Length: 118
Figure 1 (cartoon, one colour):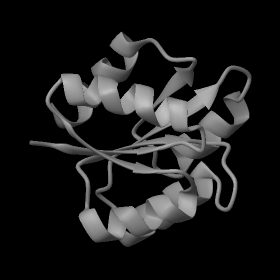
Figure 2: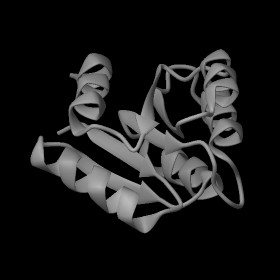
Figure 3: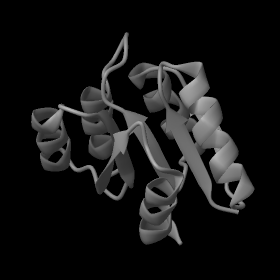
Figure 4: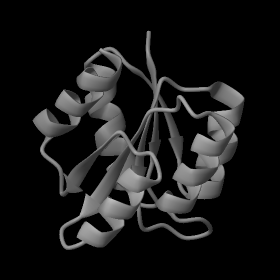
């Protein structure tokens, strides 16, 4: 069963994404900031990371860079609010494989997940 790490400082967003992924047969791990995400990634090596950009402690772009430095093959999809185009471009340059705009459509999230890990 593929594992997806969901990273968002909003508990309801983690719960919403986690429920969606679990319904489609994925194992779900959660982190509430970039630093927790980095630690969880190193410990569990998930197949995919869904990561918010704007978070306390460590933002998503910094966490993305750290994860990709540790594992150049890491598959990370960034979640961004409308109007964060500059951050989306920066995250793609930093190695994100895809991005989904929040509030997200469940179909878009699953399309991105399936594209990257089946």
